[in-house]
View 1 (spheres, rainbow, N blue to C red):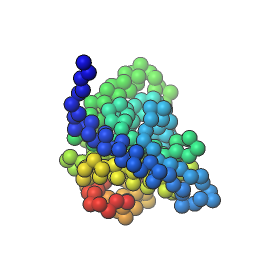
View 2: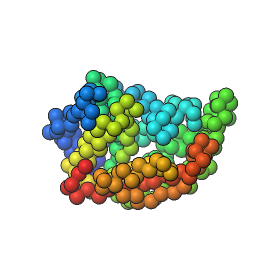
View 3: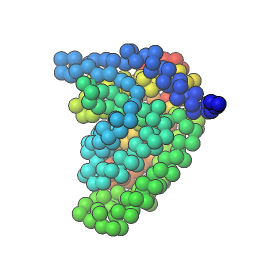
View 4: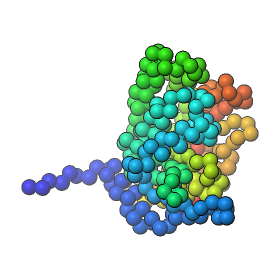
Length: 257
C-alpha cells in the first residue's frame, strides 16, 4: 500500500516557488543594459550541479566584491560558512543567473523562521573546524587568516545587526564581469516574485558599508531601507575607515523591483 506524507508548511513554500518558476521561466531570460558588451543571461532555479560554481563565486567576491584570499586563505571553510546553511536546508530558494551555461551570479534565500538559529548552528560548526585547523598550524603561513578566525570566535556575534522577525532572508553575489548589467536586479526580481507567490510579505539582507562605498543608498530606489546597522572590525586591518554591517529590509506591497 502506498502512503503519502502530509505536506509541511515548508513543503507548501517550496511548491509555490517551483510553481512560480514553471509559470515564469521564460520571463527571466534577459539581456543586459549594455547588449553590445555582454551576452544574454537567464535566471533559473538552483541545481545541485551549481554548488561548486556558487562556492567559488562566494570566495571570489568575499572581500567587498573581491577575492577573500587576502583576508582568509581557507576557501573551503569560507564557502561552507556562507553557502551551506542555504544549500543544505533550502535549495529550492536558491536562484542562479547563467550566460552560456556559466554562472554569472546567484541569490540564496531562506524563508525559515528559525534561520538565524540555523546560521548560528552551522556557523559554529564551521568556526570550530577553522579553529581546529588554526591550532594545527594550517594557517601559520597566513597570519591574517588566524586574525579572521579569532574575530569570528570572539567578536562576530557582537557585531551583528538586528533583523526583522518573521522575514525571509536573501544573500546574493554577481561575478565581476557581469556587474552593472542587470544580473543582480533580475535575480532580485525572481526572488521577490517567488516570495509573493508564497504569500511571504517581507525580507531582509545584510551588506557591508563604509564611507565611499554605501550600497544601502543605491538600494533605496528599490524599496529597501536600513533596519539596523552596527560597526564591525572584521576588515579593520585592511580598511582604515569605519565599516558597518547593515541589515536592509523591504516590505512587499505588490510593487516589486
